Image (cartoon, rainbow, N blue to C red; front, side, top):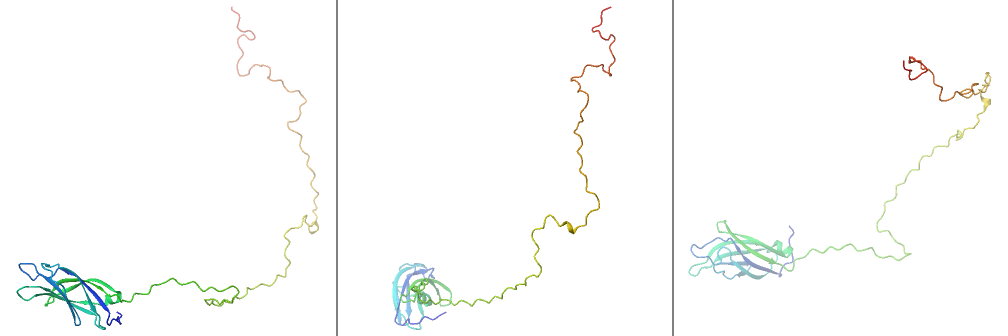
Length: 243
C-alpha cells in the first residue's frame, strides 16, 4: 500500500452519524451515550444523546488538522451519569488511509470493551478535500497537419520487405510442339494398297409388297358356305314348306 505524503496542515472533516448495537450499561433506565474523538492533541466530544440507548444518533461534524505521519484517529463511547462517574462503553481506532487516498470514506468502525469483547460500532463519514484525484484519461489527439508538398516522415518505421527469390524458369523444350489440328484426309501413301477389289454397290430390293398380275379382290368377299357348320335340312329354301 502506497503511503500518502504532503498532508501536513491539511484539514480532515469527520461527521459522527451515530452508533449501532452498543453495549448497555444501564439496568433500569435507558443509557445516555456520547462519543469522544481524539487525533494527536486535538479532542472533540459530541453532545449527550439522552435516552439514546443502544442506537443513539448524533449527526455532528468536527474538523481536524492533519499531521504528517499520523494516520489514525481514536474514538471512545461513554454513558453519561448524573450522580456517579460516566460508564465506559467501548473504544476503537479509525484508519485514515482510505480517506486520504480517495477523499471520502463512509464506514462503521467497531468498538471493544476493556476485555476485548464486541461493544457495538460507530458510523463516521470522513472527507478529505485535498485528496489527489486520478488524472482523467483523454482520447489521443490526431496527428499534426502537414501541408501538401512538404516532406513527410512516416510516424512508424516499417520493417524492410523480405527479399523473395525469383521463381525457377525451366528451359524451353527442344521438341516441336504438336499441331492442335490433324491433317485430313490422311496421307494414303503411308499405307499399303489393299489387294482386294473394291466393294460393288448393292442394288436395292424391289418395293414391298410386289405388284400382282391379278386384280385385287372385291370387298367384302361374297358369302360362302361355312366349313364349320353343317348345312340345313332343306338347303336353299327358308322357311321350309309345310307338309
